Amino acid sequence: MDIIYQNGFIFGFDPGACSSCPGNCCRGESGKIRVNHNEILDISSFLQINVIDFIRENLVPIDGGYSIRERFTGSEFECLFFDSRNNHCSIYAHRPLQCRSFPFWDVFRTDIDALIKECPGILVGEKLIKEQVTCVNTTNGQRKDDESE
Ligand code: SF4
Ligand code: SF4
Image (cartoon, rainbow, N blue to C red):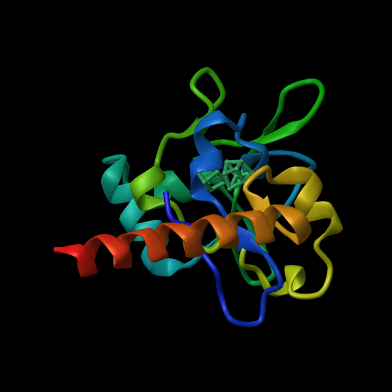
């Protein structure tokens, strides 16, 4: 799977790491999982739940908006929509922008220590260079193949 880069961030992200990760970004310390108006409509429609009931049962008011509730497992918090049996988001195709944009959050432009500990898909330093060298070699190999045709 291709490494993802974004301007202004000093790391790369390997989405392939998610398949062997226990879902660290959906569990652990308590946090805010913001959902906007359109996302609330989309998720409630996907779950076939009346919007009012959806808000009451799954969201908490926060900073003038809403955050998805968390459940406490006894040792950590996890998002209400996290399927811990399968380490998977149960509303994956409808997850809010905050989740879709992870790990490229403003807070991680300057401080990535906590991010590196949490997310095994983060590539920095030697890991990042190794990945880039592999990518360049692969691209060169492709060009050679193309030229020989
Ligand atoms: S913490 Fe990183 S590797 Fe793990 S599921 Fe989240 S984005 Fe994927
Ligand atoms: S909505 Fe899905 S991706 Fe976002 S925190 Fe909850 S389980 Fe994780």
